[in-house]
Structures are given as C-alpha cells and as structure tokens.
Length: 367
Image (cartoon, rainbow, N blue to C red; front, side, top):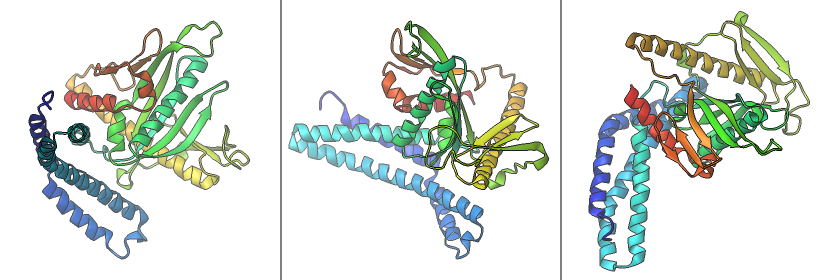
C-alpha cells in the first residue's frame, strides 16, 4: 500500500465527517426525531391528511439523515481495523478491499457534505422540473427528450421517485415540453442548480448533409408547494381548458377529454396535466403545479429586489449554463463552475453528480 497513505486518508475522512456532524447538530436532530415520532404516533394523525403527510415526510427526512451519518461513522470507525487486518494478511485481496471501501466512503461523505450546503427554505422539498425545446427546430425537440432522459437516469441512480405529469410531443421527433415531479430528500435543493439553458453541438441526425447543428433546451426547476406557503389562486384569474391526451400512451389515455390545461391570466403561466384518466385528478395536479410555479415566481421577484439592493449584475439562472459538445470533439462543460468532462455518454446516461456538487458549492460561494 505504498502508493497511498491510507492512515492520512482515514484521518482526513474522520475530520470531514466530524465537521459534518457538527454542522448537522446530531443532538438537535435526535430531539427533532423524538418530537416527530410523538406526533406521528397520535391516533387521529390521518384525520388531517395534509398535516399527517407533512409530519411523516419530515420524520422520514430526519431519520434518513441520522441513519446515513450513523452508518458512515460506523464505517469510518471500522477502517483502522480493516487496515490492520489487511497488513497482517499481506494479500492483494485484502488491500483491494480496503481501497475500495476508502473510495466508497470518500464519495459518500462528499455527497453528505454537499447536503449540508442545502440550507435554503425550500431545499428539502420535492422538485417539479419542466424541460422545453428552445431554438434549433427538430434537433431542439430531440435534444429536449435527451435531456429529460438524462434526468430520469440520474433519478434512477439516486432512487428518487419520478412522476411524469404532462408531455407534449414534437411533430417529427422528440418533445416540445415535459413536466415531471421528482420525490426524495433535498430534491429541490439538489436539482435547482440544473435550472437554465442546456446547449448541444453535434452532427444532426435529421440533416441529410450531415452538418453540425446547435440546439437548446430550457430546464425549469421549482419546489413542490406546501400547505404553509400561502399561495392562493383566484378562480377569476384562471382559464381551464380540457382536451384529449396526445402522444404514445396507455390504454384509454387518449380516448377521453381528461387532460387539463390551466392558464393563469395575470402572469401568463400555462400548466398542463394528462397523467391521470380522471379530469378531476388532472385538474388538482395542474393546480398544484401552478401553485409551485407561482411560489417560485414570487421568490424570484424577492431575489431580484435583493440583487438590485446589492448591485448584483451577475447572470441570471435563465442563461446558458452548460454545453454538451459531441462534434468535433467530446466534452460537457459547465460555464458557471468550469467543471468539465470528456465522457459525454456517461453524462447523458445520468452521471451528473460532479456537475451538481460543483454547482451547489458555486451557488453557496456566491451567497
């Protein structure tokens, strides 16, 4: 094991984990856990489903954090024992095992460290993501579908739940837009750094002359609205249209006028939902999406006021944030953090961890 100073690596991991434990304040978390368990044990908890959901979600989040920290602490404590055994055995297998555990722990502790940076008011919530094709014609529609697949694969890697609410398909290929909900601890805080314009450069599969094309897809990320957010919508301010679901989809999905589109007249925001057969269910889901978008709009206006007071002239989230170049060379580069990789296929298959962690650190530094 001469190539790596294992003892120094163990000491560094232990120090990092201790700092994380201090930031998270495990004593406070355990007290919160006990209080939430008491609330969750009330016999008539589910007489108010929304309040019950809030309690159980908070308890799940606290339990997840405590269990994660405890597991990592146990693994770090075991490392010196593993090292001693490996040195006594003097076998390649034992050496490989501890090196593998070191690499695994380094990655896991780094992920947890990133979570400690997610301290925003809505960071712990689920996320609503909307992806739209922008400039680039049919290539942009195809690119928007590729971006949505990239996020779906990322969510699979992290065991996040995904529920597609609405998809509008392109005329020739790809999609015009799609909206989906991502459920899991700190989904909004994690994925909000992906908001902005994603740019693709490649040889177009839709160009008979095999020319290079540039296309764009816009990504919008908003937190799922909570009952405490006080987002009220006046029925007089909205227009509700019903229509028949379109595109490839299951038995009965496009045989009834169950899809719902809601237009919020004061802001011009339009949301749709077609994932359920019931028009009532689709309307309820679309209203929830509209509330989330109005919440983000209100927060954006508040941030803009603060930026104006601070004299902040930096680019907005809506600007181009990342380029994916497939020709004449292979590279994905984030323009905010300068993080880049040449493994474009891995990124398109959902390997976004490096981009997201560097984005979260970049955002914290700006604040």
